[in-house]
Image (cartoon, rainbow, N blue to C red):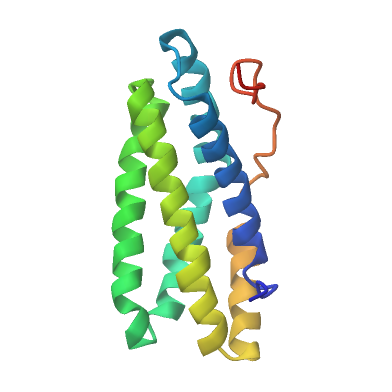
Length: 164
């Protein structure tokens, strides 16, 4: 199903986070002396987009989804995942991740995003009326205005390189 225009700003942010996850997967195992560059890139994405993104989902999207009993368990799961991801993001911001933890973070974040896109967003588009989706989109636009697009080029250390 095509993404409703009201949810596209969140989906665009998901795409940028997934791109980072793919690069981490392809770079793993990350050499010890490259970990700081990866942590810096993760921290930048967290500070520029993810914190505002999570807040928008928790304050706007999840309450709209919780109006439907069938989505309540999924919303609880996603909130729990947000909390777990915040803990790992804080470790990245503090420079406390190992190579294995960076890879685990990428996998957890990727799985979380795919769950939101494939389950939550798809079902919400089926359950909400066009008017309700429009109201949701307006609220999201306002909530996301303070996030910047974290579409900066990877550093020389974190860019994808051809396989050896």
